[in-house]
Image (tube, rainbow, N blue to C red; front, side):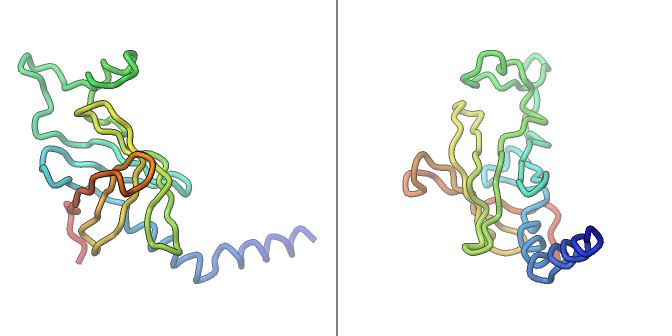
Length: 151
């Protein structure tokens, strides 16, 4: 019985439809540059969720040479956290039906605010990242470019 169950589970999880879904979802993985050019964010997948962290800053240090910190974070205990390496995008999940990454959040260290987030793939090297409060109507969209172009 357990052998039959294992075979059925293998067949289910190795089906072409699920593999295609995973491949579409995984198109988000990579290093991206927001339109202002002041940072690079690396988006990775952990389980079935996508996360983005700061991997490069145009100005990584303060005038005194110390690393730039998350000084606007509403949680005072996090204000001493360096921005480089900080996870600013969390918990995005790919929705196969609408071809969007949804249900996650994006944090803006400039103002210390966390927004709901959705991402749409424009082509293999451009995404539209929308941060919003409540409904997506009330928000802002930025176009990010993949750093290492896919051919």
